[in-house]
Length: 326
Image 1 (tube, rainbow, N blue to C red):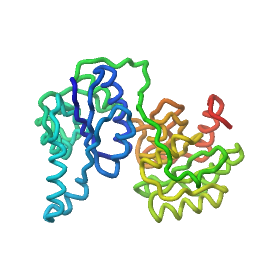
Image 2 (spheres, rainbow, N blue to C red):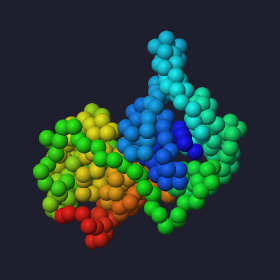
Image 3 (cartoon, rainbow, N blue to C red):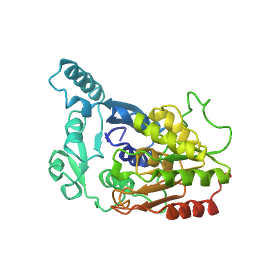
């Protein structure tokens, strides 16, 4: 196999979880060229993998609401032209949904993916030229890796940890970064059900201050910025300017430790090998728990908000065996 297209459009955490599949494929097929279809807000993520040749950003989340507009139709036409520019030996649908099938079928290559018993939308399997069965009880990273292995006939060494293949991503403007070591707090999420109390974040920030690490509090919207500033004021932390995904990646790669909600940035930081504690308040972490080459801990579950004491214990347990500074 010389050229492959991956279709994994969203969300941020799901895109991060698919990155080790690229590493596996490059190991099995030396010299393979891999392109990736992804929603535009997450396009910087597959571009971080040193093995991705070309990223094809699309905006289906926006387009589907404006299909009647000429500008939208022109944008879809331009994206389709890019999608059909090259021939592929296979189009690997790691999303497994009708929306990903819709785009995968328009590429120039045989579409392959999960079988019907492996999918949340089983009818999507009807459109694949070849399928493989993968347990729905596997963690998200493992599901992607096992699908590719099953389709293309190779084995995954169970003792080998996932390799996310991330390249360095320098921060364009690092003047705001502290000169001292810093740790990162990620208290923001897409839904309020995921939130953890602000006073708990402040306590974690003060724990970092006592260790000699400056807390950096991440945000992504005006409301989140206001919360980040309240937390930072309570623990003498820092609030960065607005950062794009690629810029945020550079900040996460250089931090000492991460405590974050179940969000894409938390998963991205763990992928860089940073010791990470993930806080789950809205669903079970089992199939989408924090994964990475460093020390990772996932706490909480559906309706089970982890206590401050449990998070602090997880942090200190990581410190006891960490080789990072501080």
